[in-house]
Length: 311
Ligand code: GLU
Image (cartoon, rainbow, N blue to C red; front, side):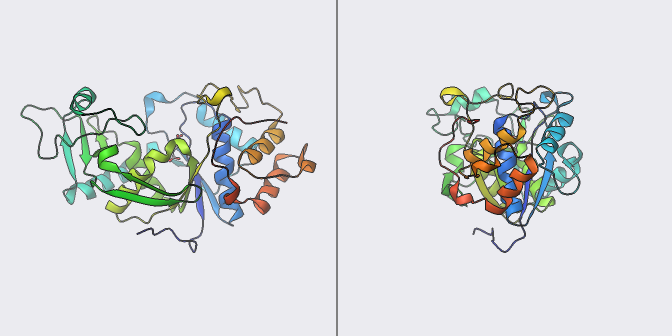
């Protein structure tokens, strides 16, 4: 059952990982999620996804906050930090373990690759075939804890893409929720965080679409309500190249867009299929965002991504 409801107050969020400065793609996600929440009279929360400590770059949290503020993308309430939420992840993990939904797994990536019968079509992952479901081989050392996923189609309705369906078992396999070193995985952390902060609307890039049904499955297991989802088209580099954390930086410390915030915001609005009046060119970020709050229409967000065009 899709429990997302138009009657819920809209609580959106932006959840950058501090592994690099924001680029034009992250800015488009921030602006899209901000406008979708604010144009519905809702709140917009900020969470720092700092679970994966080795990949974090010092100074990036401050840089991300300063960049968001410089564009006028203010957030509501306190910032949430994944690194401070370990107890909540543990509780959710233990609740699933108590229901018998979790099992230890000793398979390495290499073993999983060898066990796979065919290369995997979706998001290049090799589906985990459930080798340790009935118990680990003798002498096996725990590498992760997993939860079973059903061998059936799961679906949700994306606000932009419409109905999206996937068989999690065939495309991905049983989900790892915790690594042997004790670290909880992104999928569990995001589901618990969105629930605890009352998020009702998740707006993020198309690159995270493969995660969504995994997260919906965990929400169902944990009896959490399902937020609305809207996956935005991706900003690319020239020729459709994927942007990396080094490209198109909008960071005020490092970026090449310094002083062009208004022009960049206008470009993001056009990228998101909105049609800001030409008269707004040269306006400040506050005025441009206000136009967005009054005029944003999710139904106009285009199917295809592409380069962000500054005028
Ligand atoms: N922290 C993730 C990222 O920066 C986004 C998580 C999410 O939006 O669910 O890619």
